[in-house]
Image (cartoon, rainbow, N blue to C red; front, side, top):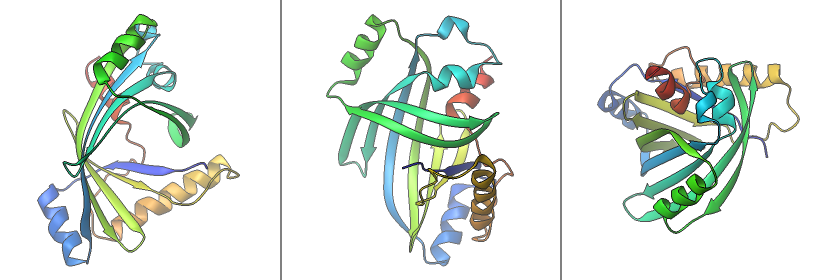
Length: 195
């Protein structure tokens, strides 16, 4: 299944968003902590012009804690499809692991180097079939991720871009102030900020 999502900057504080969504009947259904360690075999080639390409050939070692209860540790490869610098869709390969440090050591032994750490807290609000995941990303700020539940396997790039624009307008219909960018890339932006 080919999924699409929008990720945008939130132009309000989280407490304002919380009050707004709560008044509209949304409920918090999940709180998470995510720590992603992106690793690549191409770190020495990294420059401003190839960040997306390098990230596209990277793996990430992920720690996920949901509601201070469920903990998941895995190695993830995301096969992302882009149209220029616009993210269209992704397919994931996920392998569960027991030990984050040993997984990182294994990848380092195979020639991988850490390219960036992306750590953030997530609060998911839900009403009906709508789920908004607000991500408070360290050194980046508050983002909103909204995933479509439809399958876009047979969709053209233009159809996907049109759908993303509709998703952004749907977010705004709930009085959430967001930027016009519907494709904020956390790892990309953190790498770019330190260059």
